[in-house]
Image (cartoon, rainbow, N blue to C red):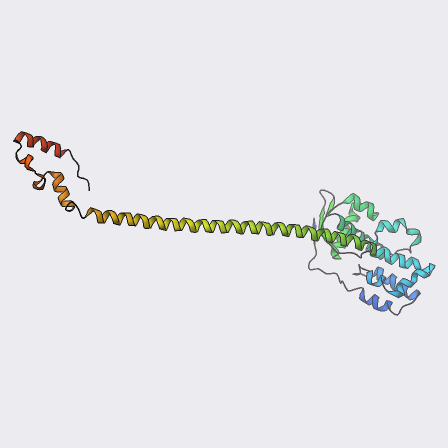
Length: 282
């Protein structure tokens, strides 16, 4: 079962109105503002509101501090954290409870791309799979997560999740993670540059080799042409040309010497038989 929602919908600036109101609110006004922000649809980040001086002043009042703790819970915590500290936190409305469960799904999605149903049932304090899948579908349509309900394997396959607020103490962890990532990128970049240099060197050698072979071919052609020219020039001079060579080889008048003129008919016949067995070379 695939559930997706496009395009991206959540209003990332929905908290701004509460931040503006917090500049002038005091005491009970701040607690009421926190209640409204925790219940408001589309508000899933609370860091800017949590940093407001008037909101931080609630820590000085024992009666109001629990609302500041609730705001921190929605900014950084999970539904399981709420159940653990339920005695020191204000009672959540159904809308606030569901939003905190949605945020818990987001937190789990940042840790694993495949979340078993058993883990979700435990973390969200839900007793049956049907209610769990309804809650996940609502989170997907709220555009805080994207994924697929794998009912065959009883798990949620996550494709996307929004980012949550970051605790100040987690900043060092993030910095170290980013430094490690940068170091890994530099290592990969160095390896790629080395491979590029090696490839360029091999290419230059291949180009040079091809150039040398082509030059050698040209030189060989010139040498062969010169040899053929020399043979052609040498064959047309000394022995009176091809016709004379053929006449001599064939036993014509030019080939008869004094000994042949004085030979008997029988000797001439034998000589003629020998000459017939020769091949004229050209």
